Length: 213
Ligand code: SAM
Image 1 (tube, rainbow, N blue to C red):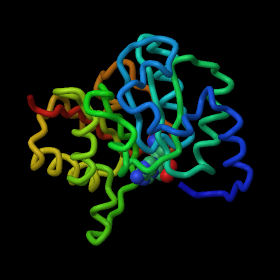
Image 2: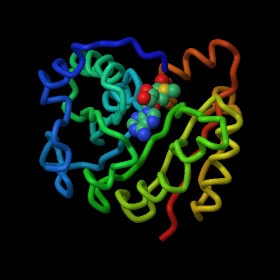
Image 3: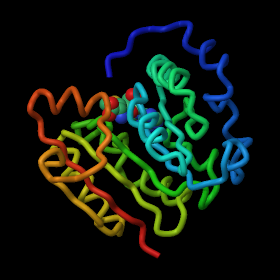
């Protein structure tokens, strides 16, 4: 994601505590208290400009959502979307996914979404990929038993790597599509990257994997 410097971003995030969680460690183990309704919690890691998380929240009012994004200059765009949508079941967090166990206790999260994660193609950067084993361990620590990761990307190399990484970690493969947009899959909500890359003719890969009992 090309980053434009937005020196005002931090202040804007602070202005909307109803949408941006500022001290997430305070909610560890009791996230339901922060939302209007106590219901399952799904998180998206690397939420970018927020189209997926806000549209998912609009379509599924019986689920709570949190979009997690490292870059404050990017997450402010997600905040703009959320302000406009005014959804009670969606929040944003400007943190690094590598530290999620500081903010979520075991079983706080019912599902993790990874959409168009940065591919980090060089082998020496493998540990930065959001499907690397250390990240799978973080997700395992915060998910419910048999929790799921839903992952999509247009990057064939990252997809193949991720299937191997999931398999080595012992995750169960529940769904795999090598061409999501021509698979008859219903209810797909496109991310900003998905729209951009599929309009260029790129194939979209998608899988759902589950932690074993
Ligand atoms: N999911 C969006 C989409 O599909 O349009 C954005 C995809 S963009 C390629 C990946 C995003 O993940 C970037 O905005 C980046 O800042 C974020 N990201 C990368 N590593 C992260 C991490 N460790 N924790 C939180 N966000 C991260």
